[in-house]
Image (tube, rainbow, N blue to C red; front, side, top):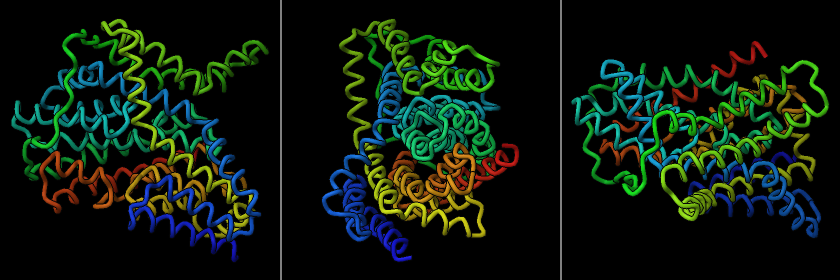
Length: 440
C-alpha cells in the first residue's frame, strides 16, 4: 500500500510541476522518476541504469516511426499537398455539404500532419471560404478541427498513439484499423452535427497568424499525388496487417517478408522514400532542399520525443520496484471496466496539465500492468487512453488559445465551441471503443 501511495504522490507531483510551475514535461518526468525510485527503495547505484533503460526501451520501439512521420508531414505541408487536398474536397462537396468536405479534409490532412501544423495550414482555408461564401466560420471550421483532433489522439503515426502502442505492446496496424472504425462516429457527432448548433457564434478575421505560402519556384503536386502520398501510411499499414493476420498457411519465406514489410518502421521508411520523390524531386526540389525540410521536421519533433522518453523512465521505475503488479492487482478489483478506467485517468490528467500527449503517456504508465492481468485488448486500450487524452481542453492547453486567437473569439464562445467539441470527441470516441470491445 505504501508503494502505491508513493506512485500516487509522484503522479500528483508530476501534474503539479507541469501545470503550476510550468516545468518542461520531460524534465518533470525525470525528476519525479528519480524521486520515486529513491522512495520505493531502488538501490541508488541502479537508478542511472534505470534512466538509460527507460529511454532506450522507448526509443528502440517508436523513435524512428515518429521521426519518419514528422518528415512526411513536413513535406506534405511544404509541398502544398495539404492545400491541394483541401481545395479538391471543397470543390467536390460544394457549399451545400461544405461541412462534410471540411471534415474529410481535416481527417485526410490530419493523418500525416501533426496537429499544430495542420491547424496553421487549414484555418486560413476556412476563412477564405468564409469570405467567399459568407458562411459562419465556426460552422464550417469545427468539423475540420474535430477531425484533426481525432487523428492526433487516435491514429498512428502520431506520437501519442505510437508511444501507447509500444507501451501496451499493441499492434500498430490493428490499432489503426480499429481507430478508423472508432473515430468515425466521434468525428461526425463532434463535427457536422455539433457545429449546426454554433451558427450564431461571431468570429473575427485571421489577423494574428498567416499560413506559409508554397514556394512558387516549385510546381504544385497533382490531386492524385497529394491524396495518395498523404494517406499512403494508412493503406500500407492496413494492407500489411490484413495480410499478416489472414493469409492462409504462408511459407516461411513469405512469413519473413510479411514480418519485414509489416513493421511500422519499415512502412514509414518506405512512405518517406516515396514522398521524397513524389512531393520532392518530382516537384523540382533538390535532394539537399528535401533533406533541409527533413532536418527541420526532426527539430520540430525533438521535444515530443523527449517527453515520450521521460514517460518510459517512469514506466521502468514502476516495473523495477514491483509497483506495476501491485497497481494491476488493485485496479483489477475496481468495479470499473479497464477501458473506462484508462479513459477516465487520461481525462483527469488532461484537464489538469493541458497536454494531450502528457496525459496519455502518464495514464499509460499506470494502466500498463493492468493489460496483462485483465486480458483487455491492448489495441482498444490505446484508443481508450487516446480518447481520454482529448477530453476537456481549457485555459491550460495551448490548442485552446491557438483556436481562440485564430478565430478571434471571447472566452465564453471558445468554451462553448472548442472545449465542448473536445468533450464530444472524447466521450463518443470512448463509446466507439466500448462498442468495438463487444465484438473483439
